[in-house]
Length: 532
Image 1 (cartoon, rainbow, N blue to C red):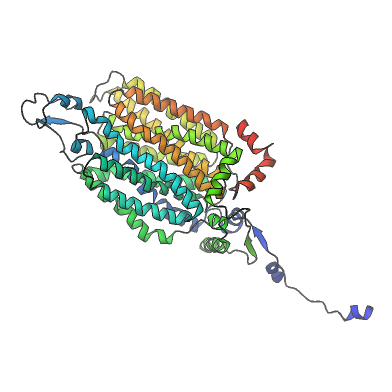
Image 2: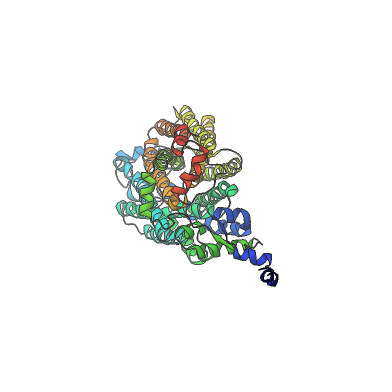
């Protein structure tokens, strides 16, 4: 026995071989944080390319500020017209057709071309409302196919192509009914852009940068908003040209930029495509000047191949997740109404339309910047609630300065109202942006796109009623300001029943999230109820 022991020759094993033979199994979050880098050069380029699509989302959403606006003035052309009250469009209701005309021409907007005034004035709100209803339905559709079939990247491609086609077709509308239908189609088409761009951006970075990266996309949304006056002013005598111009950028983006965008490794892993997910993470690491360990493999999440039908059922049948989703959607309804309502309502301010839109767009820049800075060190819930409160209080204060003022009265009170409205819009913009980031962090990968799409639906539902208040604002500005104020304050209060997500990890499945969050509280459900 001793002889046999003596004859044994020790085998030397290199440390490198031991490392290769031992699997290092990590989640996507752990790989990004430890090896790829929380936010490196590769992720910055990725986020930049993805965020460009927000420009088209903004342009298609807010173009009706110009194309559906009531012309600022009219003038007499022949007897029996005896007035020239350019500040009162209702005065033409009793006049003979052909005795007056809009200053700027009959093609300057759909109201001018199709005479959407007097007893037809509420028809002017139909296209914008149907656009947001289309966005509401489209959000559910794109959330479904993005989670279950196409993924984030291909869904953005589909949304951009359809946005380009529907925008171009809108320019050939022969009447208000076809125009409203095409605006509905355009709203449905563009709704996939915001949902997937936000998720695609935030899923590529570490938890420290999720809030800032999510806000980064809204800079491009603001850029698209700011570009509208620059596009609309040269085409102020023909609203159809505006749609033709806006149809070009999303088509170019689809053909030239999308091929360089990577799919979400988190989604690929959840769908069981771990090799592709690993390849994308490896590419990120290489561009960041790093290298993944040779023995690294990705940890497969439980129920990784859950289809969207099951995911939807799991979200609504999981009590804590359903409560979060319902609370977010109600809050989103109020915020969506205020955010889009304030933007569409600029025509009811006593200032040049192009100046007012440009000012609102400029106010979004500090709003996004301030939101990005505050997200780095403040709680999501606190930032959202206080932004909503400020927006609501500002809207209510505007009532004071809108009373007793006549159209065209650019008095000191009008300037004060414009400043307060600008502050309120900044706050509403911050609340709107933060709510998206909040939603991304509240739900796991297998239902995240669906959750964001549900939030988007509630935002669009709120937005769909905003055009009606814009029309009412032409008769009573106080009413629209009051409704916007109440909705905003109510939304901010609702957030107190949501848990805080600052620096929390992004989970892959509902089961994993429930299991991981349970040690931090008695249960996830009790945490929701206590507002912790």
